[in-house]
Image (cartoon, rainbow, N blue to C red; front, side, top):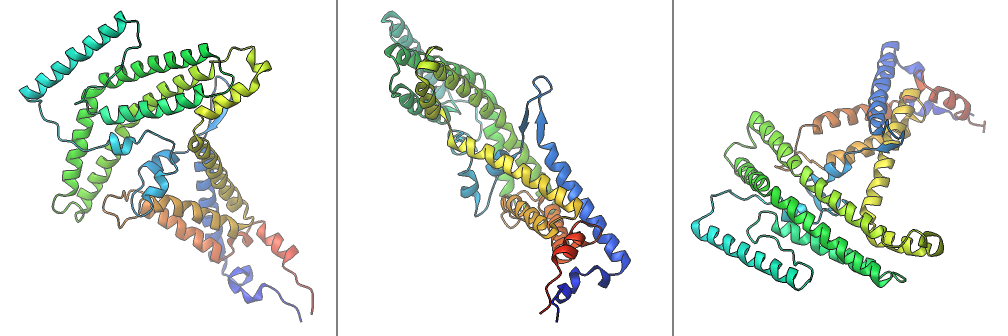
Length: 370
């Protein structure tokens, strides 16, 4: 007696009408091509240097996550110095009162006086952020995080006293650069927080979650307001990168040969483990998407590819569960349809229809006679 795949008639091509097999082949090719094309789009090449990098919107996807897994996804993000909690706070914009204007002017006079005294004494200027600035809480958090990294840098064994003083000077310079930049964006940040306040009121309005047209408008406004903060975060990250590069350059070049451990310790001090993890995740996701697409188009290990595609789509869908009021439903149902297509490909062993799985089943599917 011999045992074959006859126990699974769905995987036996002879049991399917020709039109069904053609439809499954087309579904497999279309789904595979979509995964492959989307995956290759994420590999970007710099024409000037010829170097390539992976651009996956994982950071944006995780930062916008809502629902029961929101904290899990956001815990995987590189540090933006708690921008979501400290900067993205809805706040109604109102013209300042006379009392508030007087308090601001008094603080400005006092701050200028402190700077003059510091200059006379040839001491480092104590940089402060205006107490009523819309970005103040976030800016203080940024500086505190930088100071923590600076402490690790100056604690590197073998770093000279001059280098430690230079580390403090570079910190002071970037601190001032941060203060100047955020001050220039103060009005824009106030307007943005006002838009967040308006959006929150819109969400709470009657019928906001019941009328499809209004719900779609809210989703679009949510995406717009979320993306508005990216330039500020990107600029702060740029200043931070420059600061870290300043610290990396503290040891003299000749120490690269004589004391290479200095560079390694400084690199370890300024490295963000979450950024490295996210880069690896982006590469893995890109390889997964391209791999799923290639395997589906070849009809090779189709069931494995279908499972891999479903895992990716489930991850994306879980960031915006449709039963959560503030979730964006713009892509959820399209992803659900593609996941259903992968389910069909898995259930029917579609790679055996004009695919390489047909030959694998012939070579490996035969069982020895008992």
